[in-house]
Length: 95
Length: 371
Image (cartoon, rainbow over all chains, first blue to last red; front, side, top):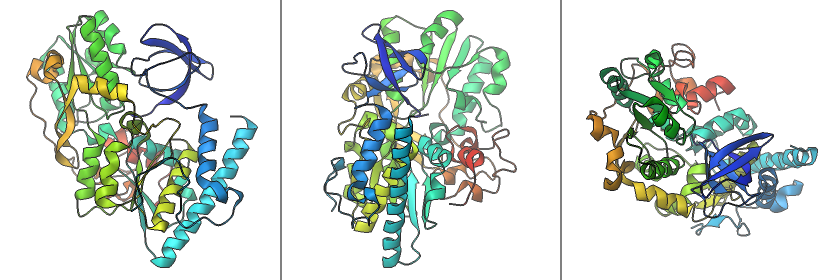
């Protein structure tokens, strides 16, 4: 039930409504849960509501994330020994 | 997906799988034959892992187990029974529900789908559909309010709009659940043998990372927020293994394109404007303090329990059904004696075989290997 799909805002209809589309499909979505929905934004749609704005195009961001995480190991070398201090998505301290 | 993106995805997936294997070898070298148990908390992850065949890419010592993250699966059986009893007793009532819930049997084997002949059961896609339903039907529309933090803000927003529009023939039968209190209950249990957590992506889009800090502070096990595509899942599992191999246990986010550190503050504010935390009964986990939500007094006129005097929830497992163990990661669907024989998606006994994101249905549809 937490299924949600990325779509792009094609038209702002009102303060709470927008047309969003993906792969030729266009639907009306409620954007009342977003702070500043704007034309062209990629958003995540769950049960007809936009629940968050994506930082960029979905597939490109996915690849960027994986490449960033694997970092030096991308070319196929040995993984490091648990050192991920360069990784920006980390929260808190490892110990 | 363009060829360039497909090629990059394939190469990255290869590297991630290689990294996962090498980290696993390192862990195995230190503790030979150690089984590494990773729980995917979210039911949508359960399906995505099976659908993408991720389990088939992992070393045999890594075991993926399901958690309590399928709303239909953790809803007590009497909830459906109460809704059916209400429908039969009160001709003015129309039950509106998300699709999965309509197929779950109650304690007497009845389903809402079986009541469809009454013309008073409506399956909706979005809470926003309730406005038209209330207007068209003219009936007392009772919405079955289940779901986690992903779904609750959409219902809170709908209720605010319903209030603004002066809709009076709508109420919500609240059985919402909150993920962090369930994780606390799960991890606190000495029988819990989970080494690492794949944290839900869209619940975290709402909550952010803060509510998970107790995992690091109290249990020091790796926990990574994951997206739902194959590459997302491999990235997150790689990060979990990297932590395990390094002997660390903290919160990381592998779904940064959607999940912000602080979450969606506006969605949380709307949720908190309409709902307050309340004790809740979970299938499998029992009653957990502050793990559910009730309507705040300002919105109590939308409370279906009060409006129709619905009985208190209870739960009884169907005979032989292992769902209560499956959602705690203690039983793999394949090990349930009913799996694929007495219990199938066409004739489900328990909710994990009913729900589109139930662990048993995912294993049934996408391959029931033992991993």
